[in-house]
Amino acid sequence: MAVSSSSWSTALVHISPYTFASIGIAISIGVSVLGAAWGIYITGSSLIGAAIKAPRITSKNLISVIFCEAVAIYGVIVAIILQTKLESVPSSKIYDPESLRAGYAIFASGIIVGFANLVCGLCVGIIGSSCALSDAQNSSLFVKILVIEIFGSALGLFGVIVSIIMSAQATWPSKG
Image (cartoon, rainbow, N blue to C red):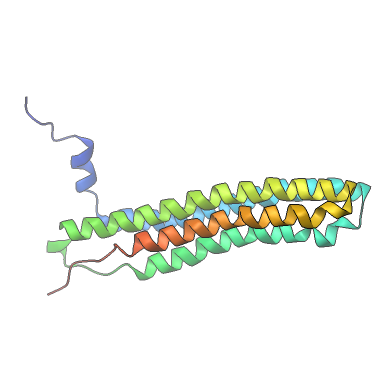
């Protein structure tokens, strides 16, 4: 049986590694901002609703919104790091295995940090929502739930660390 030239592996090998790298960088920042926005939406809506019952909670519960915003900043930082990994390669070496590996490594790094921050934004948003609602009922719960929120925020940092480790594999062929 002959191998079809329209297989997925053939298609992936013939797409420029710069395309994969650029998509990875875009996913890094885009999906991270989506996660931050989603978390802010969840936290903010609960915060506004709970502030009707207890107006005192608005200022101290803004820390949950700041944690969500940090998720977007993680994506921006990684996108900048990944952007510095791009190097020009002669057209004769653009499809070399080393170039493909570099493009795939940057793509994987962007995917990792983007989706880790999406989940982190949701996690921090849900915990921040619970924190606002609980604080409106019983102010002694604020610090206890804030500690849980800090652990939820660490998920985004794990994504950043793994992404930086993955991007270390991005070495382009020499120009000479």
